[in-house]
Amino acid sequence: MSDIHYPSGVRPISELPRKSEAKKKRNLKIAAGNRGMDFETEINLTNDYYKELGLALFTKRPTPINVVKVDYSHGPKITEAYFEAQSTTDYNGVYKGRYVDFEAKSVHSKTSFPLSNIPKQQIDHLKNVLRLRGVGFFLIRFASLNVVYFLPAQYVISFYEEKPRSSIPLSEIQKNGSLVSMAYRPRYDFLPFVDALLK
Image (tube, rainbow, N blue to C red):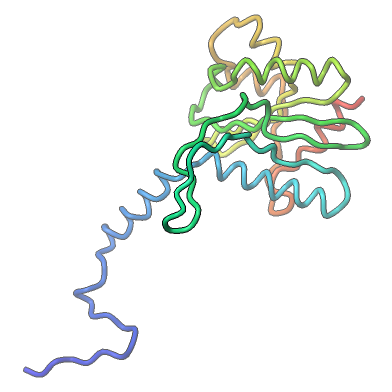
């Protein structure tokens, strides 16, 4: 029996991955990925859209790190570092002449937002922002429900300090916040809710 010569780039069926194996590999990539990072990417795209139109300027605040050790054997690679300071919130910027500061959180729960997701320094930071007449809020994504809510910082701060329970129920978020519409551009149009806080 003679060998079969396949055209360049074509593999025999016996060498192709089985559907179940290919699907499993795709699922592993999704499971291992940082789902919060997907949310962050979409917010960054929204912020880029607002900037392009000259509506607002919001930027992602970098987390300050102190580099201790760098490996230069195969190009510079940080091998040891630590956080220099506790982070405040994810984003800050300017809208209609007012300072704006907000935090983006993604949760897998379908029923509530755990307060343990908010470090105390974020609450303290947002309290200072509001005291100085800045605008503060949270964008909370319920990943399994594929919905995003806009929640004013004042409400979250009050709930956090009173702690009637360890998490904010979704029903309370729906009552005290706003469902953010999702589209292609902008991905999450939250400026109308910022307008309401400016009044």
